[in-house]
Length: 136
Image (tube, rainbow, N blue to C red):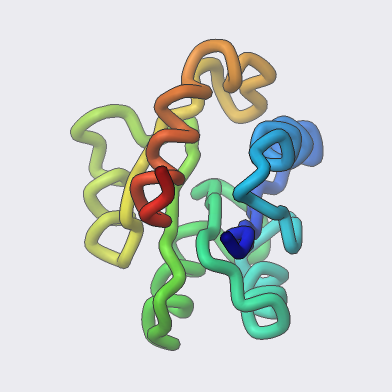
């Protein structure tokens, strides 16, 4: 099976590392890029053509919602998983992200830099990725 390409977009370097470590531990997934904001992510999308983007919402220069507006307008089959501290169940940010093209939303368990993501939401996060990419 061909590895699925993942792009990680988060302004916090530690959070990018946490997500990257989780994804790289999976033999079916490959991190093809990391970006600190939506502007960088749009450039990487054109170069790397990821199957899935893990996206924070609150970032400088271009936030996640603005990124989704631009990325959705380009079309394609890329899936988007929002991973953010501001997307509690039923939040307006979650609803807006889904309206703009996010396929799933997972809340960070303990703030903007959730070092405990693997322990507290890792199973949900990875299951979400697998479901969106039709992996078993």
